[in-house]
Image (cartoon, one colour):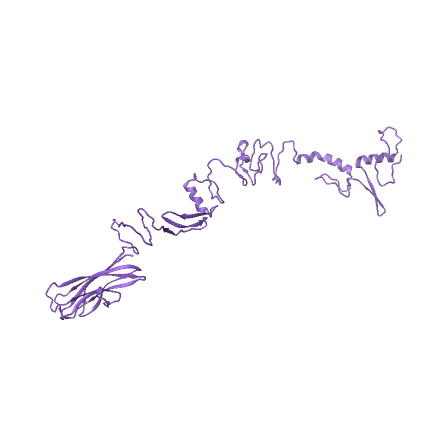
Length: 403
C-alpha cells in the first residue's frame, strides 16, 4: 500500500492498523506514518530555500507549545516536555486556586470583576477584610472593612450596611459625628434642635428656590430665595388697612390715621430722631451792657420739623433807664441779631425809674423750624439804654420734634 510519501500531506493512514507485535504486512514507513498522525495530527510539508520543513498543528518552534507557567527548556522535545509537565503537576497544582477544595490564600489579591458568593458568606472571618460583594445580587462600591476578630454573624451582609452608591432605606436613629455634605431630601421634623441648627448653618442653597411675599394689611414684593444670600422685602401698609394695636419699633413713614395714639406710661423720653424728642438749654444770670443785643441760650436742631420756644428773665434792681426805651427777647437763626417780624419778638417799655419788683420775666411764643441739616437756634436778648446800674438776664430755650 502506498503511503503517499512524496505528497505534501499525510491525510490518512497507509493501511488498516494491526495490533503490534502481531505480524503484519504493513511496512515500517506506514507504521511510522500512523504513529506520527496519532501523536501530532495532519503534518504539512513545505520547502524553503531547498530545505524541507515539516509543520505540525502545535509547532514547538514557531509557536512554542507550552503550559502557562511552565516554560519549555532549550532543545527539549515536545514529548519530553509533556512528560515533565505531568511530573511537575504534582507541585504546581497546590499553588493555584481550584474550584472544589478548601484552600487558604495568602497575600493581597486584586479582583477586577465582581466576586459573587451564590450561597452567601458562611463561617468565620478573622482579620481585616475588604469585601465588594457579600452575597448573590448584592453589589457594593468601595471597601467594607471587617474589624479584626469578627466572625460568623458579626460580619455584615451587603443589605445590612450603608453602601456608597444606590438608594437605600435606613432604619433606626443614626448619629453623625461629622458634617453631612450634599443635598438632603425628605422630612427633617424629627431632627433635634442641635442637629437642625448644624444642618442649617452648613446649607448653601435650597434644592428648590422659593418665592417669599407678604400679603394682607401689610404687603411686600415677592422675592425669590434659594438660600445662597440674604434677601429683604420692602413692606407697605395697604391703603385703608386697619391694624390693631400696632407697635412701631422703627421709623414709620406715610400717613397714619388714628383716633387714639397711645403715649408712654413708663416715664421714658422720646429717643433722638423720634416724634416727641425734646432739646433744651439755659444760661445762668449774666450781666448785659446798656442797649445791647446778646446771645442767651443756644441749641442745635437736627434735621426734622421742630417747634422752638423759650423765656427770658431780666434783673434790673437799682437800674435807671432812659425814658421811652425797650427791653426784649426773641428766637433767632442768627447770633446776636433780633429777627424781623414782631411775631418772634417781645418788647416791653422801660420806665425811667424802676421802683417795682427787681425782676421781670416773659415767655417767647413758639416758632416752627423745618430743617434738613443741623441748624443752630439762638435765644437773643435786648437790653434798654441804662443811665445807672448794671442789668442782668437769664434764659431758657427748648424745642420739640413734631415730625
